[in-house]
Amino acid sequence: MDVIEAIKKRKSIRAYRPDAVPEEVIREVLEAAIRAPSAMNTQPWEFVVIKGEPLRKIKEECSRRFRAGEVPEPEHQVVGWGNDSVYRSRQVELAKQIFHIMNIPREDKAKRTAWTERGFRYFDSPAVIIITVDRALTESSPLLDLGAVMQTICLAAMHYGLGTCIHDQGVMYPDVVRRHAGVPGSKRLIIAVSIGYPDDENIVNSITTAREPLDKITRWVGFDGVSFN
Ligand SMILES: Cc1cc2nc3c(=O)[nH]c(=O)nc-3n(C[C@H](O)[C@H](O)[C@H](O)COP(=O)(O)O)c2cc1C
Image 1 (cartoon, helix red, strand yellow):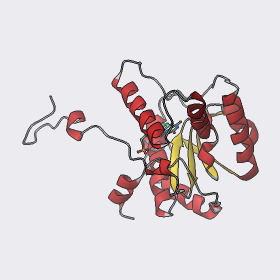
Image 2: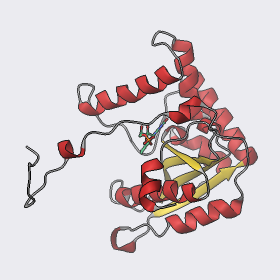
Image 3: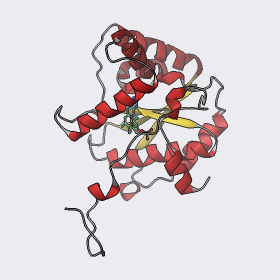
Image 4: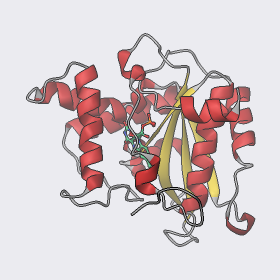
């Protein structure tokens, strides 16, 4: 697949076929992804790839904790915006888009909760890649590098007909993953990437999310034409 085509076609996949992804394929995805750049080639990323019975137990326990209303204790804060910010508006737009396509009315709390729970079940993906980082590194310094490898995983996966969903829901109860996957306390769990063959029959996968117009977020300097103002 052409690079631009892959970048434009990538989207978050929130429903998967149950088919297992061969280890060899995930290995090839990760081998490609670790060609991502990092500051001074520090390569701060590490991966925990989970499938089968351990993943089933993690999904089960995370969704149970969510249902019980247990407060998540993520080791990396994804949410950091105010309720009156444009970032919050974009978040709300996404939720509206998902609930609309899933035919879940605003007032149907049970259905909304059931939807949210799907994330804690890793959207039923047959495998997940958890990206971790050593605690020897400061909290913010490796994040750009981790973002680069995260996106490269998603793009490389497409070459093999795989879909992905990056989600912090999968690391919101980090102790669960830590226990079932044997991740030592010296590693910080940053993000989960669900991976598997997309269920094209599920309407949730048909969502294409919006983007701000490029010229609203770009200042062109020294070019002809109208610039950002
Ligand atoms: C750091 C990060 C955390 C995310 N966490 C979640 C999540 O917990 N649940 C979820 O459904 N999607 C999650 N997403 C997916 C975003 O909602 C998605 O990337 C965004 O809406 C744009 O849609 P697209 O990926 O289909 O282009 C996350 C994405 C990123 C980059």
